[in-house]
Image (tube, rainbow over all chains, first blue to last red; front, side, top):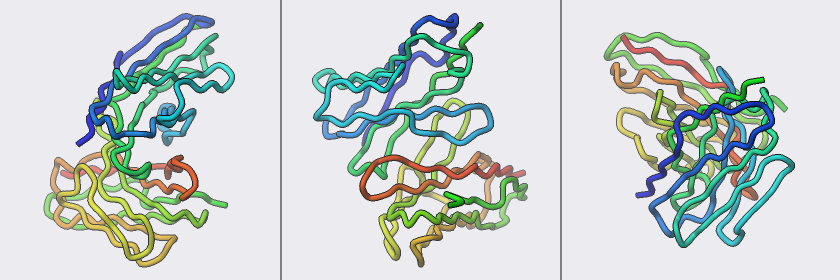
Length: 112
Length: 112
């Protein structure tokens, strides 16, 4: 089955810096790669996703890149703000977008 | 719309007891799923459903049962609770047109 590895597990940056979180997946058939943000004590919420027919997608300060050959995808956050502090999860589909396999999460801390 | 509603929010069980976590959505989404979240392990899929009357197993189905008699409801049953089932449980629904998971607020279960 699909296996998703996520790095780093924790990431500390200064406000205004960029943050990059990387994930690798094992199943070359996976074709959907979302990123979820979970604030402390809250439910996860989708922040951006990408499908396998696209190499990059941007939404304001957030971007995701996908390298299907290498089977890895990354989340890029520019101009980080304290409210970006949260746990971020990557995921990959294993045969339908309702069957996601999640990475283990990255705790991002943005210091003012 | 209330979105995805889970009950109870907190529950303490003794080993061997059974219980049902309730999940309801009012968005007319086809797909529903249950995940458990454990520290350092991300979110893991327990069971999912692609429509009323249709359910299937995810990554970690042992010890759990589900049914989907209506589009709105997707209860998760713990047959004989074990300490290893101590976790935070999230129900999610997904429309058929996109891959976005809409999560409930979560249910924190402790098994003593």
